[in-house]
Length: 541
Image (cartoon, rainbow, N blue to C red; front, top):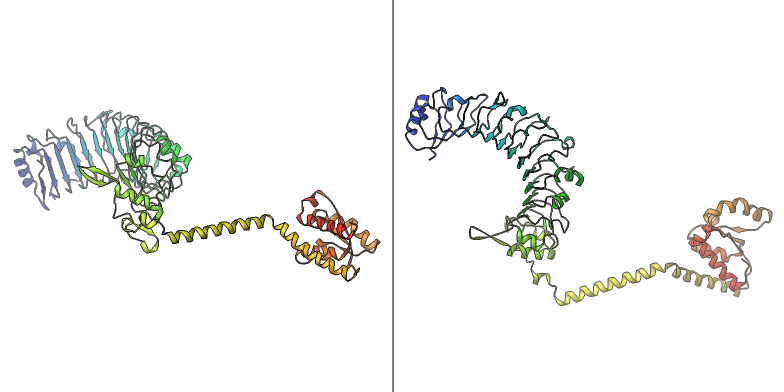
């Protein structure tokens, strides 16, 4: 039985009268909600001295001071919750029965003295909730006597620091919640989570500067099974950071990486966290993952990748064996490109079911309502299950197929021809230039012309040009009075045309052979052309 009482104004006498009546019943759970007492006398619960009440919840009641002596009159009290009671002060009193204590959503600024002379005030306390208060410090000495404590929640407090070994003396601590610490000065020391008993850690929604956090933070809690990191900014983590941070957690079964800015799934998860049963990385910027990523995660039962940047689900990225063992898959809210590449996935969505309380449900969470097309534009916002994509739609009719094959064949032939022409372009160019050269040569011979514009055509590489200009040219031009044509010095325009026109207009050719000359394509062309003249005109080279 768990009755509730609610009123705006209540006198202590009226409340005591009600409680006296409850004590004569078999009530075990009692909730007093929204009671505005003019005073909170020490004997307010005297009527429950002989009651069976084990759980008492005061919600929205102005108590201001938590005095355990007031509640100690309830002999079987095991669970006490004082929520939204404007508490700003605590006075503890010895209790052997109290197991669960929740003082969440109050105005407490300091941690109560649970330890007196290293002995606990609450001998059997297992659950402690101080979330949504104004605590700034948590010293190991505040809690190290609570040897039976299994769960500690200090979410949403403006703590300055969590020191090394804060929880090491709590041998039964299993669950620790430190979500959303509301302090820009919050720091956490490298051995803060030193605890062999800890199995569940909620460290989500922090405003930490992770560049100042030691990546070995989780090394000393090897038995951790649940790790909640959602809402942290992990976008700056690289693969090495993730490896150092997560690889010690060999027994991890559940990891939450929602809204962490991830652009990829860390490789350490698939390589080291092989006992993982739940992987959630919703609302990030993940677009794909390696084909073999989930191969080693044989225990995985839940996969959440909702609201990422996934456009196409490829068959190799989610194997049939993975889908068979998963009980829940979250891929909704991604910008799917609805094309025939998605055909297999649409078929998979339709036929992947599981039984829940004997009812068949889709394994894919939110299907079909939240699986929408983002492209093409004509289907944007349309459920992918409502698109005409099907085997028939994706099989092209015969005329279209023939046209497509013809177009592809033509394209392939064009590419092959282009490649052939490109590969032998110099041969084609040489043949074309030689035809032009032969035409001009025969024309000149037919006219019995022997009027050459230049005496000597000088062929050299650019590396030897300075040597030629400094030592050879002065002797030929100045001392011997010869007319020289040097393409590097005198040529203007297309170099091939320059070579053809001016070598044909020269009586002789001089070739300056060197290693760099042999590597130069234009020099090679000049040498070939000079050799042709020698063969046909017996001109001395």
